[in-house]
Every structure is written in C-alpha cells, then in structure tokens.
Amino acid sequence: MTPHNLTPRYKDAPHFKNYWEHGNGKALIEWSGAQVSLENFEQFVPYYYQKDEFGDAVLQDIYLTKSYKDATAQMQGWIRNGISEDAPESAKKLFAELETVPDWVDKNLINRGAEFCAFSGADALIALRDYSLMTGYDYAYLSKPLAATGALKKGAVKRLGETLDFWVNVTRPNALDVHAKGYEYAIKTRMIHCYARHSITKHVPDWDAATWGTPINLWDMMATNVGFSLMFMDGLRKLGIQISDQDLRCVLHLWKYVSYLLGIPVDLLSDNPKKMVEHFYVWTSVQPPADEASKNLACALLDESLDNPSLKLKTSRRALRYLHLSASIFLLDREVAKRLEIPEPMAAQWFPKSRVITNKAIDKLIERKLINRKNIVKSGHTLQMKVLDDYNKVTENSNFH
Figure: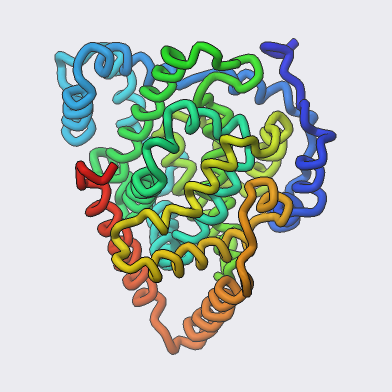
C-alpha cells in the first residue's frame, strides 16, 4: 500500500492521454526513445511526500532563529568560504554533502553544457519562458506552492527576474565549482524552497498533502528539473537549433548536478533523456490539468512585458508581449494553450518560424565555417547578461512593487 493510497489517478484522463499520445509528450517519446509505462509507479510515490530533510534542518537551526537577512548572510559566508567550526551540526551535515563532489560529476560535460546554454542566446530565454514555465503551469498541483506563497502578488516581473538570475548564474562555465557563483545560487535557491515549504505548512492550514503532496516535494522538484533541462532543449529544437546527442547530454548533465545541489536525491536524477521522459510520464499521471490559479499565473507571465518598466515605450512592451504570445502558441500543445487561456494573436506563426529559419541558417554557416561558433557563444552570453542586467535594475528598485 502506498502512502495516502496514491494511484496514477489521471492515467485515463483526456489531458494525460492527449499529451502523451498526440501532443508534445508524444514528440518527447519519439525524440528520446522512451518506453513509457506505469509499472514502476510505486517506487516514485514516496517522493511525493518527502522533503529536503538536510535543508529543512538548517532552516530550523539558522533561518528560524534570526532574521532572514542575517541567516542569509551567515549561509553566504559558509557557501563562499566553507563551514565554520561553530556552525550547528545540521549545517555541517549539509555542507559536508555539498562540498563533496560526487564521482559521477564530469566538469567537462558541465562546461560544454554551459557553453551551449550561452550559444542558444535569446532562444534560450524564449524556450525557458514560453515553453518550460508555461508547461509547468498546466499542472495544477505543481503550481499550488506558487499560488500559496503569493506569487501573483509578488509580481511576474520580479518572479521572472529571479528565475532568470538563477538560470544565468548556474549555466556559466565553472559556475558550479565549490564556492563559485552558480554553486552559491543553487544553495540559496535550495534554502528559499525550504523557507517556502515552512511558510506553506505554517500559514496554509487547508493544504491537502494527501492529494497535492508535501509542499515542494522531491517528486515535484524532479519534474521541475525536467522542465529546465529536457523540455528546455526540446523548445530549442522546435525553434530550429540543431541539437547533437553530445549537446543534449552535456546540458542534461549540467542540470543533473544543479538539481543535486538543490537537494533532489540522485535516484530521481538522470542525464539520460530516455529515462527522464519515462520518469516524467509517471509523474504526470498524478497531475490534473490547469485550474484557475494556473490560468492566473499564465496570464501574469504573458502580461509581464506590459508591466516591465525596463521598456520605456508602450509600443515596445506590446510588441514584446506579442512575440512571447506567438512563441507560446508555437511551442505549446494547442490544448494546453487553450486550458491556460492563451489567446492566439494574428500571424502567430511569423515570429517563431522566423527564428527557425534564422537558426537553421546559422547552423549551416557554422558547418561551412563561415561563422565561428565561439563568436555565437560570446554574443549569446552578452545578450543573456544584458537581459539579466535589465531585470536586476528593475527589481533592485525598492519602490517597484
């Protein structure tokens, strides 16, 4: 018997079957060679009710005994310089694990994955925003912690800026070395997850753990990893970027290590696309389609461009919203777009198809050695850092909200 008698309750639901038999799920199966089934459902169920025990213990000893600012400063010192002798045992346990790089970590693969993330330039930001994040909103239970912690009140601009800040800083070369910047971002994000879980447990008395799982549980975090890695690469593929088996392996390996630093058990992690799709298939069987909170999150993300003060002209904001709207319609299943109430703009195919044509042309020029790939990597990195800098300038303004 599984905890709370959890079953693959949506395995016969239209949204589940359509996604895996006709939609983007089918494409993922064909791309990865996955052989999906629910035979191993039982082995994953416990993770739906498990949390990050090491991280939560540090939360109790550090974050709940002083101000959040002081706790973060103390953690930052340990992250950058190593754990101190007077640190509590919970912190020593956590950092003993974090500072011991697992044998399976291949730094060369990670750095090649980071290079590919920069190479993909603006398309990386499109795939993350309009495909990975939007797809995540279609799973109602996965979205519940965001709604419970006031994500809408916080504002899509700040939320997207924080996501971009994390993504950029963990996908740079050598960023995941112990004490480096990406390593720091991963651990700080891990503690934010722990703090959010504590807040939900304390302030949301009607949280239905039997149905929704433990807030920010380990199984949901595995699914989020799929969104940032495999689904991200699938989005780039749809946008016309040629992805070799090596490119795919390197990016998935990078995110396997990022996710390990975030506290996801290695048993749930893989850099094998076939296994990732098979695991994701099982997880989706317990997830209902978008609800009202999901739709509100999707709408806020779509309208983020209209609220972003980094764009001075209203016409520029409307134009950027149109581009993201078009990309979402192009990348998502039509059924998912309808559930999230994403409207289809006029000439919706124009922008994404222009990206496909451009990316295919760039690949041919690189192949013929008419363009140096390293220059594309450099320009992609510069663009991504410029976008991040624009968001940081906005969100650092204390009066923004």
